[in-house]
Length: 175
Length: 154
View 1 (cartoon, rainbow over the protein chains, first blue to last red):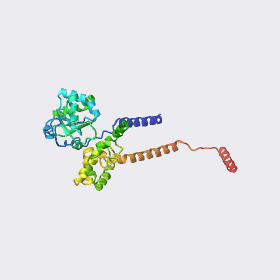
View 2: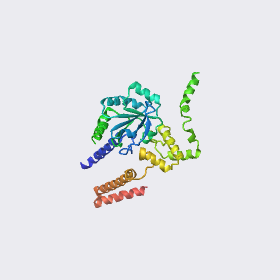
View 3: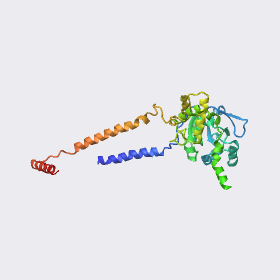
View 4: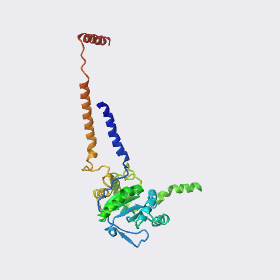
């Protein structure tokens, strides 16, 4: 009886490993920047090249930095989710228009709505590189001290917004 | 006419890429050094490829950044550190051994040792389980004659 159980136990262990292993996404490389200060930068705004944004401006606030581009497909999927979030006024969402053409980026926001408190224009992707961006969209949760607390690789969905981003924002706002 | 247009379209991407960062890529010594380094870096978008051979946008950017840093006088190690700082150790094809990567290095050996131990245990169990054959004198003699006969035949 005991011996007959062994293959079953081996099967369970293997199934456990496979369940965990196969549900991990190898494309989601954990960011070493989590719990590190968000790299400081100064960049012009998308809508107004003469105005500068500095990471210093957001000190004391919990905010989201959403990296997007007009050429990015998954950004279109998350756009309505961000619009919905913006209408609720829970947390400022700043856009980082990454490796885009100014007119293309502006056209997207004009056509399908602008969910961003403001949009920063990163034409050559240098700031994106400093933030470890390797595929858009990516979204960073940054706390009042300017520390990156989480990074969502891929689109923001109603599910990861509800279960991951907003609880973290609420918690960080309490501090 | 149509064929010309198609041919033109086929070359469009090359037109778009040409000219980008040409001045830096012109230095053959630095280019060689850059390629050597880029071969050790994983393309995060196409993970089984290295940055030197990948044509992805991200890899193009990383190669360009490597050139710029080299131009600015950074050592290979400094450039690797910059990449690891931003993208983590998984960008390295040959990750360093430290507390985080120890399981990666030793888990296979531990599994091998466990497997051998289990195998030895099983073999010993089996030997204990199979009883030595005990024959009567008569049976033993019959076995001996049978065996001898066989030997004679061959």
